[in-house]
Length: 248
Image 1 (cartoon, rainbow, N blue to C red):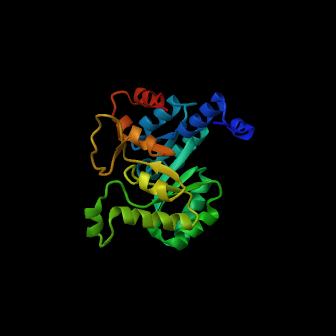
Image 2: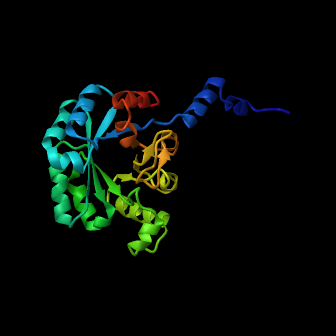
Image 3: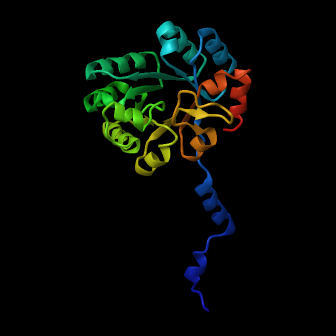
């Protein structure tokens, strides 16, 4: 059987073939985010001990309400990204002002409930500047049974897809989503994925319903993986975090 010169030159070299294969299997590893749902002393010790490590620190109600700038300034001064998990959910002008205040604190990430509505989302986007806004669709503690109790007659998958589409259409770039819904959402949308409810091997689910393993979250394309109780309740939280970082 004869081959033309053109056909022969189109055959890739082994090196080219190998590079193409590697491009297909290599993926960007996610960032590790530590949820500082603990007391100020423990949080500050962890922040200082992890200096120069590639982690993001998430501040929720517990520390933010009690310590506000004391904790957010410490995170920024030590050179870390600040994730404010305040889940803004209010009328448009109040949400907008909340985003402006978060911006003044130097927040890198800020959560907002998508159910605040399109106008609130659009106003948040207008003033966000360098903050990556993260839309919250369905809390990982909720299942379909709870949705029905709230009068929402959609499956949890349809509900999450509907709110995700709304958020992205309004200019929100990131979504907070359970690892259970992540493959579905990644198949439909291009977005920055933050996955909470991640558990390490042997950890109890506790009040989180839709949990996944660390390996599942990485496999399904998480951009940030949030760990809280899995590391904070360990006998040695610092060692636990360092062990997890070795997997990234």
